Length: 193
Image (tube, rainbow, N blue to C red; front, top):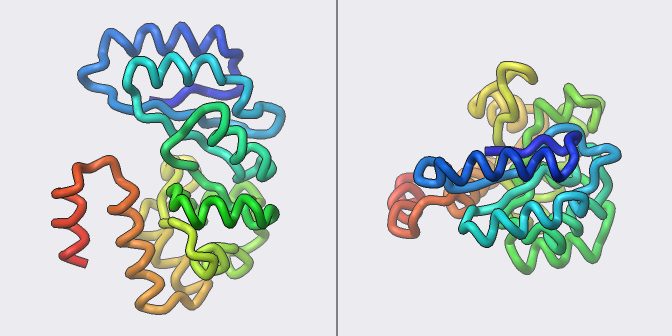
């Protein structure tokens, strides 16, 4: 379940309170919608309460927003995963920390193009992120709006960036490593790749 970051924190608290009644069906919460002008730190107290209630936390950061938003999502929201994160390459210290900690980055190439983060898929920085040993994977982002489910994102990105067999395999393995499955399930799926 995601909070819309263009709302204020009080509005999002109301949503979290309603979600608590359905805690048996919702295991994680995220932060999404337009990044610009809506820094993660704006939701520090909201995410603190979500963590206290044992929700897994994730956040969109570093797609349209600057690398500082990734730092904020990690430091203020204590997220387990960064959705997008493509702006991280603008901050060497951040890249080093992300590489060492293996915090997952769910990269959504086709939505990055639609939002003009990159002008064309051939300019996308996913291959550079792989080269830096970041825990990246390819995902879809609101496919009905941005176009392209997971397979389309992966196929078109592979072709545009000329990703090798091993690079594609790494992306797939990373997606299972970064999932919220139990370790036994992760290993089972990774062994099939």
